[in-house]
Length: 368
Image 1 (cartoon, rainbow, N blue to C red):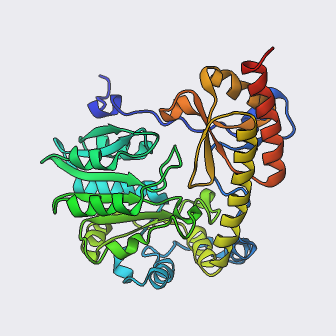
Image 2: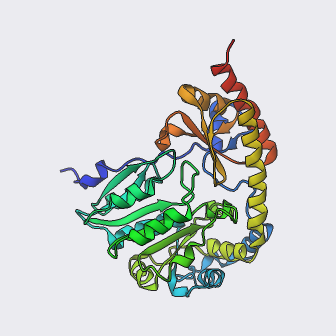
Image 3: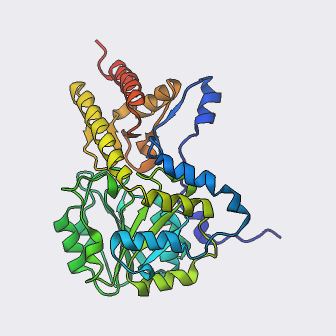
């Protein structure tokens, strides 16, 4: 007798991870490979963070603080909220899952952009729910249409600002529209994984919306600008009544002690965020200048990655870049065929990448 597998698993979309550096080195016989596919901060964390990690490694024989008290205390001070309004997870992915565990059920749905971060849909399907997909409009989330797509069985509206995989933003008037029109039975989940890369003029103080809205959950992470992707630590901010519900389904000791120590050290070196932001902005402008000069299309980005128009030969371009030692994210894996998503790296790597990419692009599209 064979084991019966739950039906929803067969409907689950598959997450296709980026290829690894070691894999590409072995396959193509390369000594140097640059991974530009996963939007990490390739400058890495602040040196003090590495130092604090090393100083605390002897403590890994103990279980971590199950409440992540020190991290939450630092975050509460940063955002001027109560500790009870913050939950910490093994990446924001885990908090998304906990949110769906708590608020989704069979026959209910969530509204998402199409395409968007795959974990939203996966987490909904795990609770026997469904998703209502709203296509992007000019590579941006069609916020008004998303709100109008909410029905009486919609429990969650997922928004990302800036958006992944396009890098576009939601402006203040759009967010105001969402919060003014979100019913009391709808939870708005605003994923701000890349928000620290936005300029002061572009960035919205979304925590200011919490006091007047009991149905808002803000997600942020240490994986991106803080450079801690390998340690998997993210957090959510909401009303304490919502956080208390998530705490009931949270796994014990869900965030390891090394990640907690690193997050605290990162928050103690906040000026580093502005340093990284400035470096990324400078390099992003360099990307734009080179792409414009060569007549190659791209989407203006509010993040540390750029969506580049690679056209009908996109698969060929991805393969040729692999041969040159550059791993990028194929747009077809993200729901945007004909594009590639490229992480902004260190200056010397960016220069090498753009030299290789422009040559490959021109050979394919500008012969003769």
